[in-house]
Structure formats: C-alpha cells, structure tokens
Image (cartoon, rainbow, N blue to C red; front, side):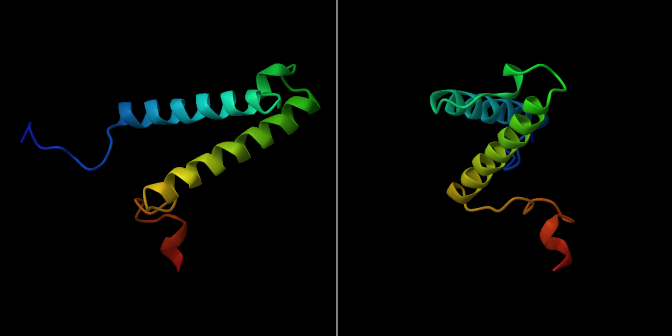
Length: 85
C-alpha cells in the first residue's frame, strides 16, 4: 500500500500549490505595473480595493489551471457548487 500513488494531492501539496499560485499572481501583477494588497496600509480603502482585485486574479488563475487540467472548480467536492444541479 505504501507504494501506491493517490490521484489526490495531500494537504502539504495543496498548501504548496496554493502558495505557488499566490506567488505567481503577485509577480504577474507586479510585472503588469499593478499594486498588491501589501503595498497599502492595512485597512485602507486602497488595500480593500486591491485585495478584491487580487482575489479576482487568483480565481482567474485557478480557473485557468482547471481548464488546462480539464476540471472545473468544485468537481472534486461531493457537495460543491454543481451538486445542486
């Protein structure tokens, strides 16, 4: 059993993937001349707007990764968004 490879990533791998996506989005935003949330004082209106934009970019990155690998967000969750029909 210990030599079997699970098709599902373990928790450590999931966190590493999430961190890589976050880092990639930060770098892409910086290369595009956009600000990241940490560029503004915590709690400022600018930080709030930039955080929303940043999260939108993260979701776009996740959707793109899902397209490349042929899965939609929530497909691996039994009660995900598509579960209700």
